[in-house]
Image (cartoon, rainbow, N blue to C red):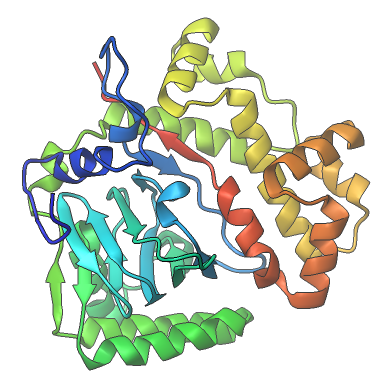
Amino acid sequence: MKASMKTYNGRGAAEAIAGTAWVRKRTATRERAPQALDARFESVQTDSESSFRCLHFSCEDLSADHTWHYHREFELTWLIRGQGTRFVGDSIEHFGAGDLVLVGPNLPHCWQNDVQGVGRHSAELIVVQFCESDLGGLFDRIPETRAIARLLADAANGLHFHGPTVAEVGQLLHAMVAQRGLDRLLRLLNVFHLLSKCQDRKQLAASDYRLNNDITPVNRHRIEIVHRYVLENLELEISQAEIAERLGMRAASFSRFFRAATGQTFVDFVNILRVHKACRLLGVRTASITDIAMDCGYRNISNFNRRFRAIKRMSPSEYRQHALQLGEGAVKDAALTSIPRIAVAPHG
């Protein structure tokens, strides 16, 4: 399939992704759709002391860790360097440097860059992820931001921007990476303002894509219940049996469902979220590592250190040292590979 080809068959992008080398091979039994064809739920963690997330990173191969996924947040992606194929819903298009895309909540997407030569980093990008509800849901409520509300509504099927606005937005995003607090939030609002005025934009996924895609409300609702419950109870003992009961499932059935849908155990998922919380605390608190481990639900410091190193590829003290010396952005590259993504299998 050519990179510029666009399909409207409801699974076009997923099928195209399955043809690339980085997707798992089909199983011989074909009892269910391969996990690679199913969008994965991504748990997005906001930056420390912030209502949204802003990442600036380089990556040799986006497809190695950024597979076909979705999340409840809006996502604005600006490609500073790189080229390849962009998948948003059933839209399949080529992208290059300067590509600027706004993706709405729960819309499956991924970027597959062309790995070039022997250079370690063939793609560089800035990604902003945010929930409208975390910003107070103000855009619909006041006249000054109604154009932004329309912009976000239009992003439900993905928007691609071009023209002079892209360079202006790029400059703002570059500055936003180094900012903190209210200055960064005001910069984000300025980005929204520019995008809301931009007429050089087009819709990516078909208008009826959401009616035909394979992320069922039942499975998405189940995963989101699990995700919300775990986030709200990270410091406590989390019982798989209690989660199963909340979903109206037996513990053994829930265990099979979760492993089949995610490719990982429930315990592994809990550890990922606990380590993410620890990272946020390490970056903003002076509490001891032992106290932070306890606040994140670990009763054994050795277990915490082992889990942290396995997920972040560095010890908690090394992470804190990097955060203090260089700022939180210095360790985000190391954290990228640990973003929990959950494959949601078709219901039935």
